[in-house]
Image (tube, rainbow, N blue to C red; front, side, top):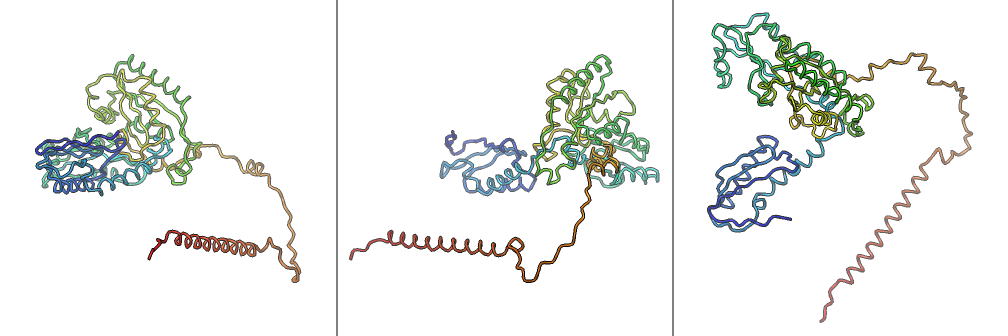
Length: 458
């Protein structure tokens, strides 16, 4: 039932809010926000409103407005807004709903289509970097093959710096010529650094790879649905109990869950590079000791991925999928059958939104060749048949053919060899029927015109 129109009084303060259907985005970028504000300004000029405060989020907005004069009409707010803005975004949302969903499982779509967000590697230096340091950075910046998801930036402390970099540079000790600081991708909003230390090539190596991350990348590259990282608490009894519960539930889910059936259009459009029978519904558990020096950077990333994790001393589970994306943390008593099943169902279910930023998770810093892993198919690991087996299965038959005899010149070709007479007859019949219908239509129209012509009495 529609809401009744609100009565507008001069000088009254009103709170106006609206959000997208199914909480979908109303605006996609700053250009859309500017268009929305311009539309609001135009509306204020026509209605005498005054906007006292406003905020525009991705999928909703809030405005506080006052009516300074008696309104000329009691039209609802949406009627007063020019039509072009709602129509414009209705078309965007309709297109988004049709384009941003597919039948490919989330874990596979993420592996093939979601590049890992780059971590910010800031190298603060007072003097020129050494040749060894530059070589280490050059290896880090390579664009092909096995590489880490990083974005390197050299920052000279003697240069004029933006305010944010200048504030970070103040933390560099005065006796250090080169200082390495690594932060999460800007899209995460996490500002705490995962590393802040003197810049040495060995420090850089420990930043981008570790034994657990190499094993994680190997399992995901081979097609596993997800690797469940168990970050130990240090309490062996609690850690073993968490692993037992996790492994038993994952084994059960792998036996009862099924992968979605791939849509033919998704296969044709290249949304998945492996056939349906090669998709693997498989989970595994990987334990990481919280106090392992080799995994210090990985542990730091996991604990900083959500607020409050660093203060917890309980076991934690992070489902990792795609190109090293941690879904979220299950902590202590939160490691339950229900929460494990919920995370697993999301990972093996249909990708309801292809936009990476609209899905949960935080990317981890991992050195791997994800592009090659996404193209590889598990079918290559199968044992191929021998040439003898292929020949035996093909059942080749030898056929002896004779040259065709040329028909006599006086013999006319058969109707099967020349279909054009039938085509010509069909075209003539269609033309005749079409002409008859047109003539009949004109006659009906003429008689109808004669019947509806007004009578003139002179």
